[in-house]
Image 1: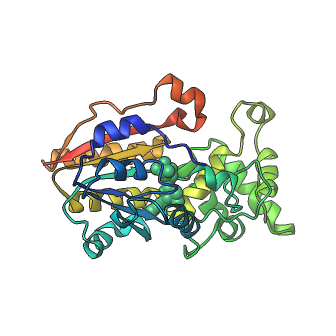
Image 2: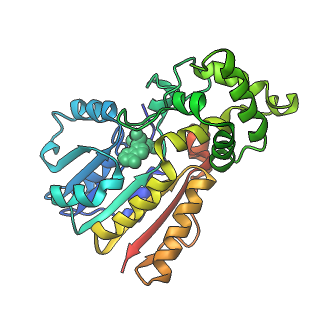
Length: 295
Ligand SMILES: C[S@@+](CC[C@H](N)C(=O)[O-])C[C@H]1O[C@@H](n2cnc3c(N)ncnc32)[C@H](O)[C@@H]1O
């Protein structure tokens, strides 16, 4: 089960009240969304968007008998299409929206799609199976130059040169099909001191591939633009990011909106989790919450 990150902080900053309309743009198992749904009862509504159809089906069957089932609308799509979805489902002029970015624990532990470098699974990394290409195609067909750029740009990996070169070398004799096959290539590309660090040497390359496969950084910018369109005046958007590349885009977008006089930024500094939360949920370690109010 995915433990919701910055739970109390999200509820505090979004401040859902009875009768209001909220959107959870990344609803996953409903950790935040269902709590928001409770807060907007009676008469309020929640729109939950999830790109991963398997996760959305799980949630649908879990909440079948939920007492507020009729107040929640679930949609299997990318939040990139937020404006269209909100128009179709009657969620224009919403009071608040949450983006909890990236993947969930379920992707790492249970999806079987190669998100984790600790399990031996076929390289896939797609949140949505209709996505154009998977990690398998990137690793086995992209040029060395493209691989180097992806690993540098989306992983900030200082050994991207060697890793890209060795991927191309390794795949000449045999397709790199699984996560552990890729981990082996990465380990052989970096110095031993790097492999012996606390952080797994494959961490950054895996992050880079996942971002590229799902176009995650582009999605954030597009999602935030749409958020502005679907919120009513005074409505709030909360965004939880998990690494510096995500947070940079969120921060820049917020600043851009503010400079155009469109929003007030409510979190002067990004909100970080309390020590207790990080202790009980290591995934929260790098989480940052930023919130704006539409003017
Ligand atoms: C960190 S999890 C959200 C967890 C959720 N807030 C909870 O506490 O249960 C992020 C979710 O966003 C989904 N996701 C990623 N990109 C998406 C996109 N472009 N549109 C909609 N959902 C997306 C992922 O499949 C994942 O389930």
